[in-house]
Image (cartoon, rainbow, N blue to C red; front, side, top):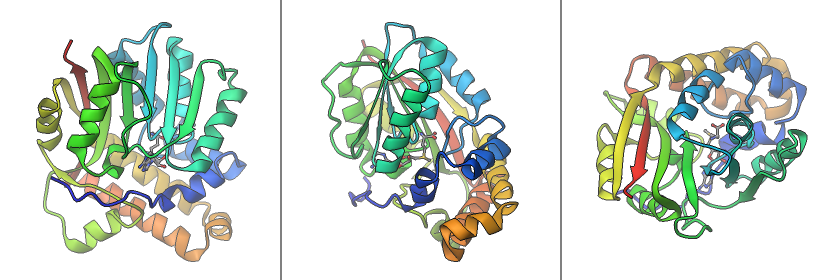
Amino acid sequence: MAPAEPPGDVGLYQAHYANFASRLYGEIRRAAFGEDLGQTGWLTALEQDHFIGWLELSEASHLLDLGCGSGGPALRIALKTGCRVTGVDLHPDAVAAAHANAQAAGLAERAAFRQADAAEPLPFAEGSVDALICIDAINHLPDRPRVLADWQRVLKPGGRLLFTDPIVVTGPIANHEIAVRASLGYFLFVPLGTDERLLRAAGFVVERVEDRTRNMAENAAGWHRARAARAAELTAIEGAEGFASQQRFLEMAASLAAESRLSRLAFLARRAA
Ligand SMILES: C[S@@+](CC[C@H](N)C(=O)[O-])C[C@H]1O[C@@H](n2cnc3c(N)ncnc32)[C@H](O)[C@@H]1O
């Protein structure tokens, strides 16, 4: 299906991860999301609690988080469930933040993070994880059939997969809107129904599909507002054009979601036993 272009551009995340631990960026996350999980997408604590209930994790479980960002969301799951986590992200500053966060949370023995390109075959053995999550990051990976086949490989039989696809096409979108929404890195937009079809083709049993678009509309708008209120400080760090382009991106993400023209869907699937 999709063009197999390299996903290498992670510029969107540069400022977030380079400044992750700063007072300013922490304050923005709290203002935007309520609770600071160290998230860099559209996830909130409330939503993560909802997702944790789907994953059937215990102290014996090994969870893999792809596109894990700062590691904060995976560490919160480890704390809540007792499971062991491994996180993978392409961005070196994200992985450095994840190591620091694991140490600070006293979870270094149960949490490992590594820099790797999740668009490539994963550096994990067949059947080595009980559950795999990918929150707001699958859209950065080309060749979804190949990606899903690899996820199926690393999951144990019966293992659970949870991912959110934040840019499912569910309405008309003009070229300038797509350009802004896709302006900060590699983005793969798929039409409604594609994820379910590809999951089944890869051998997964699809157990749940839930519309989380409203969550994204609210969080994108909240993130935009929180940044706008600190424009001068952010401009000094990100530069005028860097700040403005991220604000345009967030504003577009919020309005396309609010109008349900791009939807964010959560999928729960199981590798057949
Ligand atoms: C929207 S953020 C979500 C981060 C995290 N899951 C969260 O909810 O906070 C997407 C993440 O995917 C990562 N990413 C993008 N392309 C990637 C790739 N090819 N391999 C691994 N990670 C990638 C980015 O660096 C970023 O941390």
